Length: 566
Image: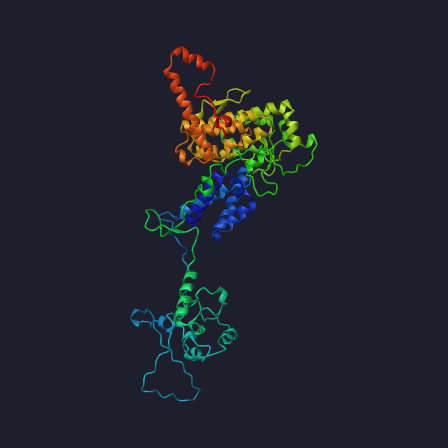
């Protein structure tokens, strides 16, 4: 069971990472709820492990710490030599439910035998032995002689013929004498009964002697039986029978993985559920005043968070601006921006393991994992854009994080980027630690908020080329298409990059990041470009050069809405 729980936790982690909502699992209330599912002994172990981790790292516990703990103990239980060691406890055998379960004790196999004669006559009376052998009283395997509470005979209550023939007041008698309604034994209530008997008539969980005959006919009685049997068999949404699959048990929990559900609406020529890139309305307009059209987090960001009310602060209380002016330290790391840029640069181990600095370096108008960081406000954004020192340090922070991901900023004016010298090593780290995908999405959104929108498209173009053309960063590919691409504020640049993605994406029939109608326009545009290029090549060299002076080369010419005639 613990191994199945570990697989379930790993599946949840993979899904939440892909959806970029892993921080939801790091919330203390959610962690406490997940911890309550552990067995009692493991809860004690987790308590000490969590305390030691917090003392060693100085940070609060995250979901991945709990998941590593469960996976470690699950692997320990699967050890072929020591995994199945159990505590030596004496198993108490329950009392028999009927005389059919009573087995005589064979004296041949007994190590000890005693004969006890019970004298039930008063003192001074002579007992005359009968020549007819008496029937021995029924005994349990442990030697206990059952006693009927109804007729006081030497048999269990379930075997009492007088109790079976009793037509009424059975329930009242059981309640008065303290019997369990589930197993007809004393010592516990029916709601806590773990040995419920099954009725031989209706197959429900109650003793046969308590069965109340139904007024339905035989056919209806059989239907009720089959319905009862069906209802008693629970269908689990987590445990699925794996049959005789290699490496799977009888019941196994399959790994959870994110899937894209392709519904009928996705086949519509003009519909794309990912983004409003192809809408005719402007980015700032709400498509439905009554709120029926719910925007995603990226749509809210691009529309300027229309329903978000900012609190009024003076400039000296704008924590994000004061942080970038080197007047306020980050929390909980207690690091000033100048110290961060000098001491943390190229310290890739610290940049990977510490999760609280990214909210300070790249703030947003929405909360993040670090609850000690402050959200941006409109006034703070305007003050930030007007401060050259803050913007200069933001570019330095951007360069520092780019180096951590194996990317180098080539031109500070245009935002052009290329591979860094250590790109192979850093790409491997990016492949292995998918939470960096969420960091990059945050960086792109923060650049758009703080006046560096022109940095967004070059970085996204770089990742599209690496994933789709050069076939690197396979674990980052869908984050690039799902999130990086649609974090770009400029709609025209988004459209051009979607066109670039469609050109290099395979198989094209599974491309879902723009409507089908737009994809057909892409195809037509590419055909025209190829035809124009081939016709130009067949003409004379001078004529070809004259024609090329007045138009863009076919390989670099971007697709636009006007060219698509949409």
